[in-house]
Image 1 (tube, rainbow, N blue to C red):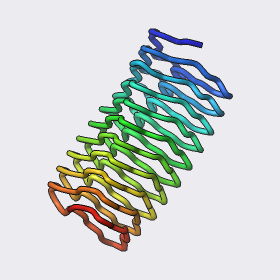
Image 2 (image 1 turned 120 degrees about the vertical axis):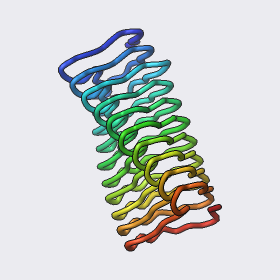
Image 3 (image 1 turned 90 degrees about the vertical axis):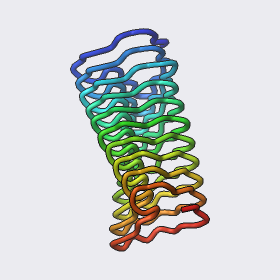
Length: 239
């Protein structure tokens, strides 16, 4: 179906649920104050949300993609949700392009438990927890995003999370620009990490990671801080 210019609000469960290979195109809808996720996609669902949907003030995640869910989300605003702006788990693998994800009470994007996802040209800012949070075998790809002005870390990778982060700009966050611990092992290439209120990169408690060709500058503490058995690999960075 084409679902356009509707207001979907204050439901007792999910605002929009696309499951069991469901499709559909969703444009210019306002989805808010639902008791579960604003949008849920699972079991092969593959919708397209584009052209200015507003997904906000939900009681849980703004968008939840899980259990083999897919979907393309382009040019939407996802904000002020109680959980993560976007949550991906259990082999969910959506694509997000050109969205704004902001002012949430949780993390901007939370990828965990074998979640994936590709994020390009999004802006993630002003969230209460981390801009991007990855753990327990989460493995997303972030390219050319802006991750800024959060109230915790810009990118936080923990508990054996991985992920590829290429050509993003990460700045102005209240904690480290990038923080890695407990077997987290991301790959960061050609990012700009700057003007954070703690260290640019902080790797500790058995954290790993490959950092290659990044520019790390103007952070309040160290450019790169490593302690308590942190063991990253750094190549050709400017610090």
